[in-house]
Length: 298
Ligand SMILES: Nc1ncnc2c1ncn2[C@@H]1O[C@H](COP(=O)(O)OP(=O)(O)O)[C@@H](O)[C@H]1O
Ligand SMILES: O=C(O)C1=C[C@@H](OP(=O)(O)O)[C@@H](O)[C@H](O)C1
Image 1 (cartoon, rainbow, N blue to C red):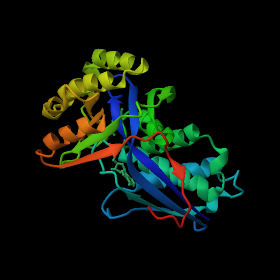
Image 2: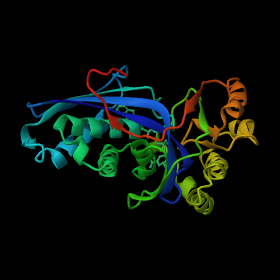
Image 3: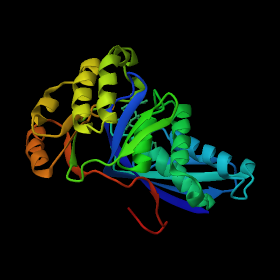
């Protein structure tokens, strides 16, 4: 039994490391997961092109999904094994939610392989991936904000302490996303959480703006606050202002993301291109994670 699913990456409106409340939006960079269920009891993961990277997250996603839904699919989970593989356009540990995209794609691909993808609510599938991320130790809060944006598309606001969806909305359809990724990596699990918690009053203001639908202003305030706490440069934020709708450090960095109309973002791209690293102009996504036929290559 084979399954396949594809999930988008996301950018940050509000980093949840200060208060547990976070907000993110889906962007058009994708991770595809392929799951083959077999009966030898072992679950083995592989990350395309990254043999050294840790596949625990995707292995745990398959295991939890089979535990939860295998019986409904008529399987006895004791014997269920799997080969799971991800192929990804999302740079890893760069603040663009590679872990959420990998987890969502893997959970949905497993549900697809079990033949139950259409009978499981997407938000419940998302919560399974968040559990796997906590078990694999790749997250601080569980990152339900990032995971829900990637699973549902659009923009979400969540409370990661309770895995509650506080809001789901669509961004201005005229906005695209510009993403600048410096050459280094920054793993969420290594972030300075004490420094983030000190800026909780700023995060509370950002949450208010986000819950009023003022996503652009929210993310700019988030950007300056978290660049301060996590000691990332504010230069890329200033490069993008005042013309963009919003600009922020994405997650725990090192990427930055701006929202706005395409001509504005093209001008910012010229400035960000003078910095070391990669700049991408991407669509935002209103759709989230979805299954894909196994013969439909990415
Ligand atoms: N394509 C992938 N397949 C499997 N696991 C992945 C993939 N991408 C990321 N991960 C997991 O997520 C971790 C990175 O998560 P994190 O530090 O939160 O970065 P990000 O901000 O990109 O989500 C990696 O160490 C790996 O365990
Ligand atoms: O691990 C976590 O709990 C989180 C990590 C951060 O994202 P990145 O994984 O992109 O750094 C942050 O934006 C998010 O709100 C919560």
